Length: 399
Image 1: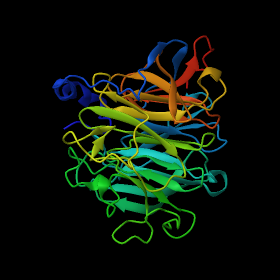
Image 2: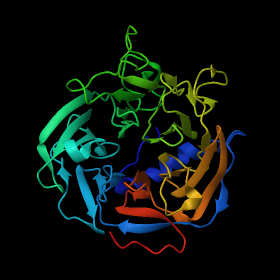
Image 3: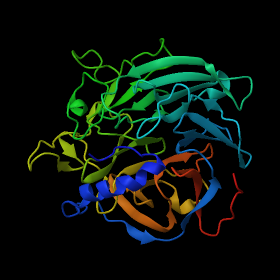
């Protein structure tokens, strides 16, 4: 069984032989004609801005806030402020987080009105191994959240220890989106990806500003359908470890981690509801079992790659910063095992300028993050955070 999300650094070495057996048992799949192979490019580099973090998995910032907030898998959120990593955590949840393998504190999302309400929402694995979405509030000290303000939003049972998904992000519409994996094991044994009666294998959309703990938005696609959960926005996902919204293009990008052969990036209109991404009927653009399956009506990937090029996709973001003009509008992503950095631009549904950047490489890339100015960062599970920069750009200082 192939892992769905990153493992702790110490687990990588014994895992590599297993990954090789799974990826190399058959000839490496080639990209389809619809997926242009990346061309080698130069110019993009990674500048280290922080080191010594404990398995960083997520990076974000509240709107208009110059600080960077980094999620550590064991259960802490750290702050990079004025060029340095603060010693005291912003939030410490290690006493209630089960960490290890694909479990832990997986992400944080700051409310769009964080400056006035102080709300943040975290996704973590509790001590029983289940997923919890919990709201916390900042304390009187802007560099410290108050753990006593925990307000549970949602609990989702997890049948296995992998494929927990793990990302929470606010959409341009102000709703909280939650990425949920299919529940684990291999091949989705319970068929959760295609079942509308479970929250597993889905992208959820919650209104956390009305109702307690939330309200199901009335325009969610399955509201009122018998046997379906109203929280569901999209389904057919294996493990959407990372997804992102790009408001200028009005697109939602989802990087869904594959099973044994294919990794994929999907891009759809952000307001398109009720989409089926295909799992476990399809893996990427291919039938998962057998040679024939019903592909009509299911979302095809805009980019996919086989396991000759990597083992587990790490989705990123569309660059909208100002320091790298050549990268504006390009979606940037990586692979956990191979560590390359790739990018492409989507124009009228067509992938263009698909590049692999020779000067940008990191070990065990777990996540990308965006600061309040739109600049893009890379988290490496070994403890480093890097900023994407253009060759020759002066470093902004050690953080």
